[in-house]
Image (cartoon, one colour):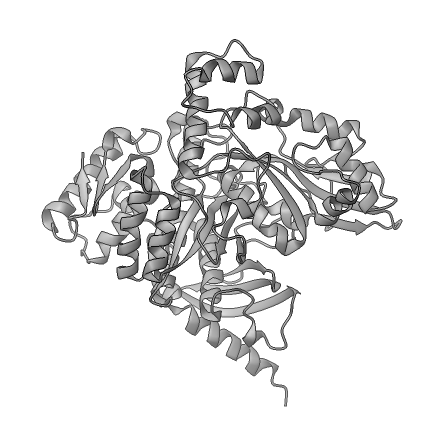
Length: 595
């Protein structure tokens, strides 16, 4: 008797049972599950856990990535920013980010209700605060899951939020103090680095490849003490290259001249031609001032700089306008039809969350990731920038020291102040600035750590060949997720059916406040106590830069919400909504103050 169909039914039933809190919250039905093992296949797919979490939590993390990818692809206004001006494009991007952040936040909320009573997930790094290419600081923060967001059972969450707020607001309360406090209470924190929608611009413009959601979970919190997003230089290459160079007493890191890196590669891969060393790096005129010197060094050494017309060994074409995380999974060598060796590597810089996510993949994939902390300014080459980030921002002669360090006597006071702010932000968050380079170890509390790297694909990923969200029936979609750990690597495809019609499902995946701002009548909608928690979470996602925390209170200062984040007209409506909730449900909304 063929038992395979029964095994498949058992697999789907187990996933549906384990993931029912998330599926129920988002009104989805699990139709099917398929697991493709890239590494570490077990004897039975029902015994498929490969991470430090328990099997149920691992499945729910995978489902979190799947539903975030699905909801964003269907309801995130994909492609509606094409042809719009910067303002219009930015609105579409913020709407997409809001859907992705909401879907992941809601999923994590329901997931953590099943964690052991003393466990919590804490977001340590997130993306969305920092203006990206084509944006300005006036555009405001994008919706995001950033530092300090706690997902746990209510008592644990309330306890941790108190100490996280103190960590942010009390200069005398250090990371070590926070760590000791948590240890005394016997609480286990799993730290997370999250980008709910990577390649947002490509998504908004309707590009055919690239957008994905990324969640890296660690078995301990990252040693970060405040909200932080910055830029980090990164050179990611096979570890065997660094080890081989070390035998000749040669240091290979982010600051090594690239002709030396080519020489080290040729010793680690005897016979490889320089032209067969394929270097993926961000391109574009806006990046030339920072990493243009790297492009010149690689080309002078004979290496190939990857462009959008080149074909990857899997037959896909890459892109270099954004997206520094996904290429990391492609790093490695292969043989062409003539048996010549080729090598794909990653160089340049990335936003902080992407850089740390990629660096945490390094020990799993046998790579070496060398990082250098950079500023938010693009005026200097990366080596000058990294050196200037080591200056003392409190020095009376900081401006003169900065001008000397970068050999630019014409820096105006406004630029100097912004540069100082970059250093202060990194210092306040506990980002190491004094070391020549850093690794993932420098940002994780203990040097021995485990990580679960997860990605959900909204559209096809050219680097791994993973498909994006695919419609397979009128109301059913397949979504692909990849889970990578030291113990294994698997590609999971789930088939999810919408239990509501398309318009109703859109409401399910939409933040409550967004729905009100788009015209839904908040005064005649049934109010539940859960609205309090939803709105609290949504405010932290939608306008984090305008929030301040004091004791158990959350203070929303409307003057600090940029118009590009929420228009003045919408701000007036938002104030009406929140004031109505406070007036009509004062106990449930006692935590909120409006200013």
